[in-house]
Picture 1 (cartoon, each protein chain N blue to C red):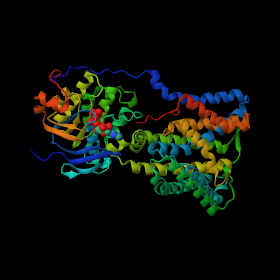
Picture 2: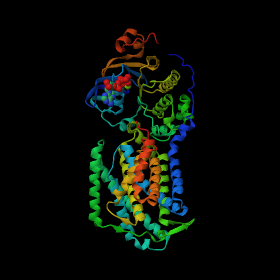
Picture 3: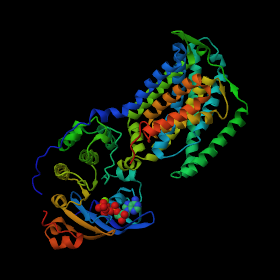
Picture 4: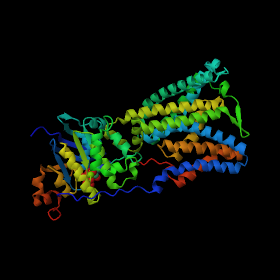
Length: 342
Length: 241
Ligand SMILES: Nc1ncnc2c1ncn2[C@@H]1O[C@H](COP(=O)(O)OP(=O)(O)OP(=O)(O)O)[C@@H](O)[C@H]1O
Ligand SMILES: [Mg+2]
């Protein structure tokens, strides 16, 4: 072969349709909100339910985000994820009770300070437990799904029993910090202050995660690793370390979700984590395994639907979410924002 | 001749329970392009993957610049200076072209001069810099996979069948880029079925069959001997060359 003919490769941009397709699922959220508006037919109830649904969705997202990354990155199904929720709740609530002087004070600053301490404690403890959980329970069962399910469920049971041992078998009631009690009225709708805070806080977590995943090298490594672990290693990154880091972060996020949920319900039990996990699994599946964006949209859908249906037809709330999962999987069998895998 | 950049001695690799490489001996001289040839299933990809550490050899030594890297994990081998363009390209479809390149530059930000060069040899990368790599055409993906390996200087480039399934125009773009890389003094071990391309780029040739190297020598010798080609690869390239 001598002088190659100077063909310039064809530079064709992908069509609008192809480029828009990943964004279609985002539209489902306003569509659902609109459907809620139409079927509830009472604007103030609708607003209350929407805020409550968004708050619930944000908390589920915080919990699901770590789970979906762990699954996407290392193909590990962690049925023990719920344990971190419960632990986070108990640790955070213990801190809040110990700081009751701050939470009871009529000062937003002091209240938030107490909350911050509770959040840090909950995340630190669940992060540390996550580190141990990965080493002792998950590491020996890489690549074996059935064993993962059994072993991580075992871990969950042990964790719940440990909570009983440390905090006793009874549920614990927890009052919200003074300035987050009560509600505000907007357009005639009663909106609990705490739910508004939860929505804002959840949105912050999502934005922060997105920034980390999009703007930092470690975020790129995680996203690339979800797609093709082998190639990430071949580029020179030690994926194991990244995975341990993601597992710890995911556990800490579940702990954060736990304390948020505790204040939402104002009541905690050892098996609360496990109860939430049903919704978390639905969110991880419909979002697309390994997709943080998908989990976010999925969590909002699940939270909203749960609240709307609970109002319209209380018995159908959980069923409706399972129905949502079936419908979405029929539309996109890999979930809403599937991560292309090799 | 100085010590080769890469030397394989009696490398045996198993995949699951199958013995795939039965003792591969191969020298890849520094600053040259060595073409690994052979029929489908001969073990070429397995050889490259074994060098990269993606398969662990059961026996044998893999000397990179005089140091045995056999059995190390791929990240360590990459850090020792080996870059791979895998057979399936291994691009990250969910990441943009830019993000793929940033990841490939392991030692820090991409060197602007190097990037300019890559944009010159692979213009589509510049055009689609901010687009998801999954939206690229097959040829553009191959360019990205190759550019990713070339984004920083490496001791050894392993390139697995870059021309596979590509239109002639794209193949010549790739050939030009690889010739450029070679002109920078790079050491390349490349698998190539397209004998025309192999012959245009290769300094050395090694022919594999059934998990062994059955012939190795200067590319000129192989290219000039149609009988040898036919005997080694069951091909007669004269008519096509
Ligand atoms: N993951 C695997 N599991 C089992 N066998 C494999 C695997 N990968 C490769 N092999 C076998 O190893 C042998 C060598 O394969 P290899 O991919 O190295 O060949 P190759 O020379 O690269 O072929 P080609 O020209 O088709 O790319 C083949 O017989 C193949 O079937
Ligand atoms: Mg091959």
